[in-house]
Image (cartoon, rainbow, N blue to C red):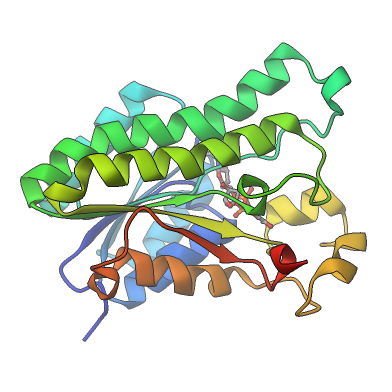
Length: 248
Ligand SMILES: NC(=O)c1ccc[n+]([C@@H]2O[C@H](COP(=O)([O-])OP(=O)(O)OC[C@H]3O[C@@H](n4cnc5c(N)ncnc54)[C@H](O)[C@@H]3O)[C@@H](O)[C@H]2O)c1
């Protein structure tokens, strides 16, 4: 028996990195999946590999119209929406604050922060119809503290916002049996991380108490727990998966 049997999940940013890992693990645990991303070829390929339990939709998470289409497609194909994993995100320009442009700041906040509002707003009516829901919003250690290797006021602002927005909706919709939690990964081996550091960690590795970068699956294990009914009394909470980075 799968830990997500009977559940329908939307996962954004699912074409690669942690989103892909969440998708594969959710499928293994019995979920029906609506996978979305801007990278349509990779996303379609993943959905094909998973099989009839998954569909892929090209989506820009910064578009409220795209969100309406995704939720409508999920209900049409699978009948309900139980889980949303707001995973899509970007690092954005690695500029110091004095050098960051308006456009750079806005882009990061659109993709990492505003999309989380659009996504929660879009799925809440479907979750109310279903009578339950679990929303997992992917923040970062940069949503808990600044200065973890990537100097970007925009990234830190957007990831702090995700943490607060998660708590706001958890409080507002707790009575409706809709749970909302934020996940705060440390250094995870994904294309984003490789692109950001060239060699997957650099100096930051010395700061990690467990002494290594994580595999995406190590974050998926936590996301799976929060998405599942095993976390039935867990809401409004923030979960570090950072190998002890913030224990310094
Ligand atoms: N990798 C890390 O170490 C790390 C650490 C902390 C938090 N995070 C967060 O985890 C999440 C996943 O990161 P990852 O490392 O897997 O990154 P990734 O770049 O490997 O994957 C992110 C995916 O999001 C998609 N995406 C980007 N902008 C989009 C948009 N506007 N609309 C739809 N899809 C879009 C990309 O196409 C990509 O497939 C992000 O929110 C990131 O900020 C990553």
